[in-house]
Image (cartoon, rainbow, N blue to C red; front, side):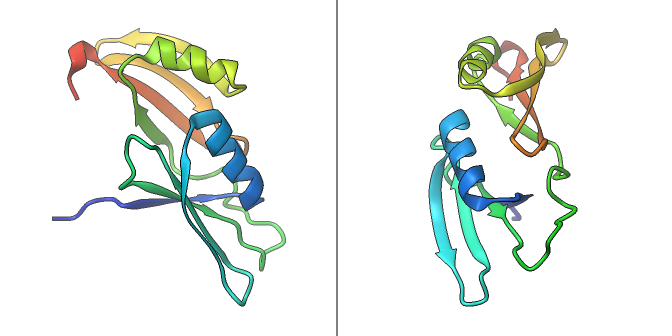
Length: 128
C-alpha cells in the first residue's frame, strides 16, 4: 500500500516559514538538519497528523527559486470550519474568502506567507 508521507513546500526562508507554520497553524517541527553543502532538511506537521510532514524546502543554491508560492493546493480537514477560520484569522492568517457551505461540506481558502493555497474543509454531516 502506498501512503503520502511528505509534501514539499518551496520557501524563501526556512526559519521564517517555520515560524509561520508554528505560530499561525500550530504545526510542530519534526526534523531540522543542515548539511555540508548548505542544504537544510526542515519538516513540520500538524500535532493531529504527525505522520504527514511538510518539507520546508529552501534552495540556497538558486538565487530565485521559481517554485516559491507555487506548491500544489493543500486540503486540511477540520471538525469546525467556522471556529477554525476565526482562530486562524485572529492569528493573522490571510483568507481568500470566509467559510462557505457547499453540498459536500464547509470550506474556506487561505494562503501561507508565500502565497501557497490551502483549502480548509469540514465534511458534511461528519463524513470524511
